[in-house]
Image 1 (cartoon, rainbow, N blue to C red):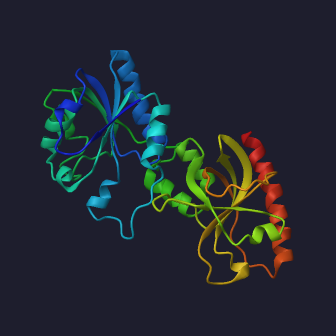
Image 2 (image 1 turned 90 degrees about the horizontal axis):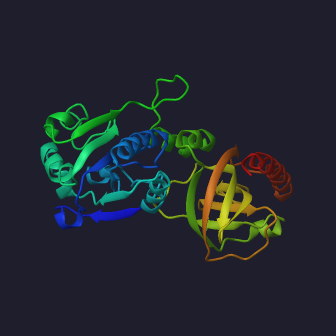
Image 3 (image 1 turned 90 degrees about the vertical axis):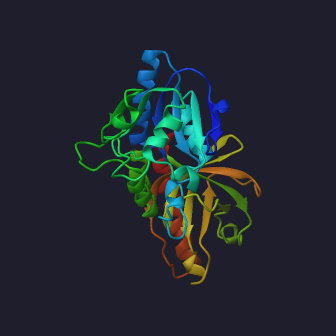
Length: 315
């Protein structure tokens, strides 16, 4: 998959010649709703014998519009998003840097300079996609701006089992924030995953008989809410079953920093400094303050049994 990074104003020399089918959206998480848009575009592209191209952005447009107080945490980093798009057989990605100057384009300018500039023969997007202010840059208005220069295909709301609620990135973020990773995975169409660096902790787990790796995650990645989870961890191209605790270790004090500690089953190696991938499968329980180490160890033994049983389904 070819990735072309674009910064406004568009340099036409970067754009390959020839018509394309273009799917556009921010696609945070590339969830099942996004997948429906891209698969629709892929079908058209294959029927027409044209490249399937995706227009997306390197960071959330809402950052430029100051919509997120306290910053924004992603379902998928840029690298992860590109990986997911590649899995969907996308031929080319136009990765646009969403800047103030780009955001200042009128809908007509955006269409003229970018969609036409990309040589789009067909443009596909979700029913709620916008390319500017919603009242003047909706999918309903796109045919007017296109003025017959390209076909516009709008993909309807993607719902589950007759529900009227759409599957959307905002809804998935809420599920992850509240620990409901099982429902989030259903909406995503794959297990939610994060990345991180293995760093030194207090080594308390080792003294309890449950050695853990402490995973320091990138600041902009969205970590599931506080609790204990059944997970898989990728280390040096191999996946290991385990259980993760996201919390403040409140059994050992009330002022501890938030940590992500993972006990890998049947694993004893020292892996400090390694980059790992964590796949989150199911929430087990919330964080509890135990009366002492013995009670904590008893619960961890139960957590391990529960995790092994859950993860057996994902062999």
